[in-house]
Length: 359
Image (cartoon, rainbow, N blue to C red; front, side, top):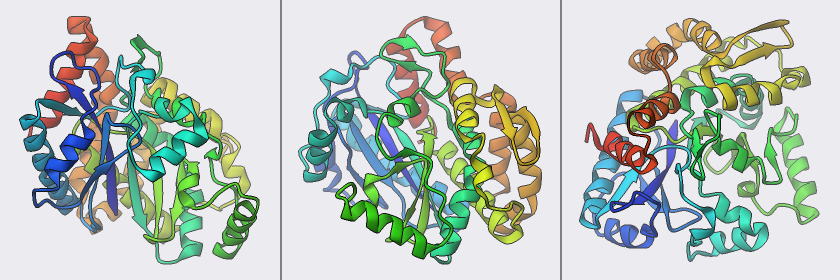
């Protein structure tokens, strides 16, 4: 498994987003550090990514080491760094596109949507033995996408208002063509044929043109889960990745679901419930004919994953996932902190402090 995190760069004076990515990256390049620290679509965000890991503890260690370098450089530049799926009060029109060919292409293609895409997500890569297994896993994991949305939700505020959503970030992603769910193809040969048709029509050039909730990444040999908001701590990011890893192992080893198009009958509904209500949302299983709370769904899944977590050495991570269900996700934490001060800038600064709390 591996993790990518998109992080916010904020002004220490007013806690708004700031155009600091180029300066920060030039200073980071002078230091030795694990993983990668690289630009994202606008100057107010950066992306960090880990190497390949099998164990939760080594993933956590690398994320902490990357955070340490990042915070050291940011402090010298008087810039705050924080997690969260969306900045609570920034205005998209103030953003500046990064000076890089890919970023300029996206801006020219999507217009104002590119600046509105200043939202922040965690991507989790899960290694797969082959292309057919990757597509099986993509469809099997799709049933559990509401779990990951609700557990990671950290964007209740957007453009200065409480959106009433736990994850407002995914609404920005949904505006892009080729977003949402992947098509129902079950073999790698069929997927290549599908990709070839879109490529021949001039619709896509590479896998990066797909903004699906889960997409295969053949150059890495992974599926990439893209629905999580960036958590407020790297420790929680590691726990979410370990949950996805244990889930994938269970699905590949035990094959508890028959893969069919019917798995997607309630996909959009369940996805909305997770974004809107988080762990308190409703989960409908149209195949089994059941409906229950997303939090209950996660707890039942944790029981199924217990033996796999022991094999993977990630029992502590699954304990963290259980605590999110019982104590609340980052969206709840953000609303509680805002209730203390009624100040969105103060909330952002608390997010900055939360990221560096264990550094």
